[in-house]
Length: 346
Image 1 (cartoon, helix red, strand yellow):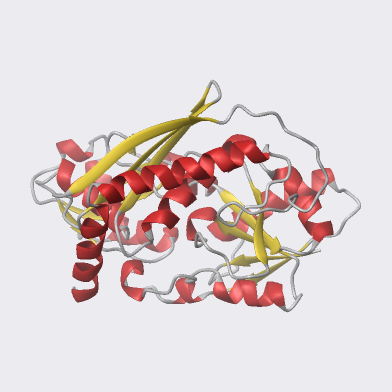
Image 2: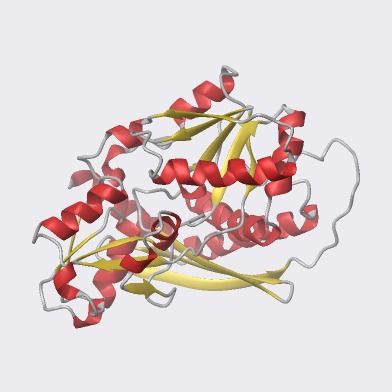
């Protein structure tokens, strides 16, 4: 069994390798008789480190080369950060597993001289580094006294830029990546959804496989976490209906409680001055039905989850579509269109 993961450097402490190792370990526990080989490959997104992600425009920035290897049967599974996967996968591929989500929240890492502070306590004109239009748009609105600049590179590179230079007072990163790297002690402030809604799929790992490879699909499906699956289906459906991506500020927050799935979604102008935000909910309290048939492997926004109730998946997808449609009816298309044009022009 051959695994592929995306990383420019194959050092064991790289985030991509750590994420892949965690998935392999879960599969080894389930299948101790199988041999798993891990293969590293760099992608377009790994190589372009001097340009903001929102400027590059390639939808499959972190996935194309990996999917080519999967298609050529060079590997059997590919581990991704789910937020890097487009909401529409190329024909022949599916997300066969969505693992239990780490925290989806964003985190603030401060320059050593600012330890103990929060964003609200930083001096006026302090510079905050982030590679995300979504984060910048929300935080510009909440903290207009701060300045936000793009920062690229892997986690190691960004933290080095923060610590060794005086350019940034703090940087914003996904808390999940910091925790997986064992750097949780660098988190100076966790941003709640009230402060900053997170990215679609943030904090979740996905295992991509060939859609027709039933043996592999059945094997990895045991890794599905039902709650994470439903939350991410709703988030991805919301993103897909809006036709969003990394070139526009789209943000979400989901919660599953007492059989009810709650989805908050928002769109923003680049400076955060114009926005739309709404919350909807739906019941996903449906029993799992073990019925063999032609609809066993139906995909919901690229995800195949046979061990999660089909009706619940449909409800989650419909929730995302309906919330996006509500925002579109209130002018979201115009906000996103202007944001996309301004981002392209910068």
